[in-house]
Amino acid sequence: MMRARALLLLLGLGLAAAANAAAPVDSLQVLGVDGRLKRWVYETEPWPLEPGNRLADGDRVELEAGALLRLRYAHFLDLAVAGPARLAVYAFDVPQGEKRSTRLVLRLDQGQLLIDGRFQFGRCADLVLGLPEASLPLPVDARCILDVEQGRSRFYLPVSPVASGLALAASLSGTALLADASARPAAVPGLAPALFKALDAPVRLFVIARDFDQDLGQWPRPAVLGPLLAERLGRIPGVELVDGSGSTAYAYEANNALKTGDDLWLKELGRRLGARWVLAGNDVSLTPPQEGAPSRRAVIGQAEVRLLEVEAGAGGQELVSEAANTRVARAGRALELASRQAQEAAADQVAGYLDWSLRQLLAGQAHAPGVLKLVMENATPEAVQALRSRLSAMDSVTRFFRRSYAQKTISFDLLLRQDEAALDAQWAALASGGWRFKALESGPGLRRYKALPPR
Image (tube, rainbow, N blue to C red; front, side):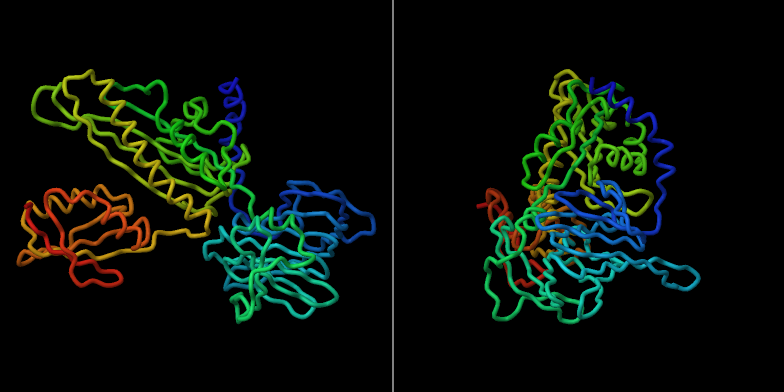
């Protein structure tokens, strides 16, 4: 049944991906409608408003008490309006050199507006908020609630956990939204609980991955990477897996797109399934050229995954890219068994990386904190090998590169997956057998050690 459904869905993806080229943002997409509301389009007769519709230039909407209208601008900025409310949408062209872009104005005369820029990640939203007192551009990456009543506007910042319904009074300072100095977390009378619930809505994720044994030229059965990612990532609070995640039926049909990195095809598949993000992966095992009998060789597992925003054309970003490499000794076993073990080890390692990355994204943090410099004195060949092994075992480090080596002092650049505090905690938790590393004077962005031989 799943395979038949996958086939039916995938038949039209090639044409759909080509047809959905990135278009200018000139409207607000309707995600959901709850309660009673009315919509007008330059007319006196109300029009229906349903999920999938768009609010464009000239649209006006009135919400009755208890109604909720959920909207999305572009693919990264979520909005929700709680009734009773009155709003209107206007659009006008803005010259930008030889090109012209469309700027939207969302005018709110009455009601409560939730702005959720958690997944904006610093990108510009050409959307202006029209209020009774003034018009202003939306603050970047803001998560706030705006209450407009009797010609006055008030901003509030929800307090984590958002399910508590607590908020801080806030004010605009330039383009930034800051909590008032005297503000304390409190339940604000009249703020709609539905807005806090919308802030806590899960992100729909579609997982699709392929496995391949390069030595045997076949797919392992049962599948490895897709089911493991779906099982592990589905436990993360704030993630809702789309039906079919980890399915081999979809993976078989998407084999070429996964192998060649056809992002448009994969994102269109995710959009058809109702996902916001698509996680695409490959897990390959192979035996590299080595000396010795085949039964004594090692098998390498290579897993790589990419988290994509579901957006037509080139508008969506690649939010996460992770890779894991493992090495398993064949030790006289059948090649099929050693290959599967290598694939499982690589899949488990990359799933651990993704767990942390997804949690950071759900908190509104898009990128790794940065690069750290590590310097080690008394860098004998044995000490350098011990340091490399230690860094390779740390999930907080994505990659590391040797930068210099002189007078028994070596330096590395560490590309961090997590922040420096997580790095220090992981470093301290590793077993101290063998070579020891004495901490020297360090600082932000720099760690210095002296290698001490085993006792």
